[in-house]
Amino acid sequence: TYRDLNIWKVGIELVKDIYKSTEKFPKQEMYGTVSQMRRSAISIP
Image (tube, rainbow, N blue to C red; front, side):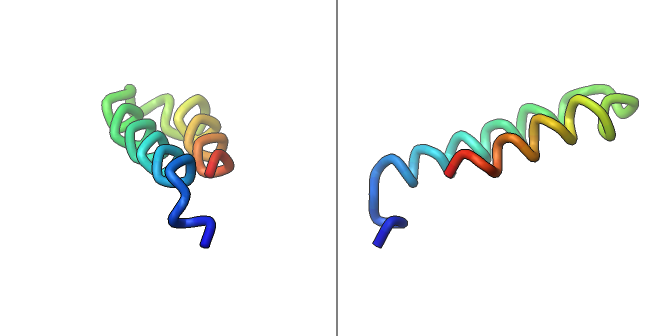
């Protein structure tokens, strides 16, 4: 399946990294920049 592909696994790791990185952003960015970055990230895989 597509989930067995290495590129899929790399994409999932990238999403996890982005989510972890955005946890460190200021709270006032949570509904702006952080939200956009997270929505963009989950469209990758």
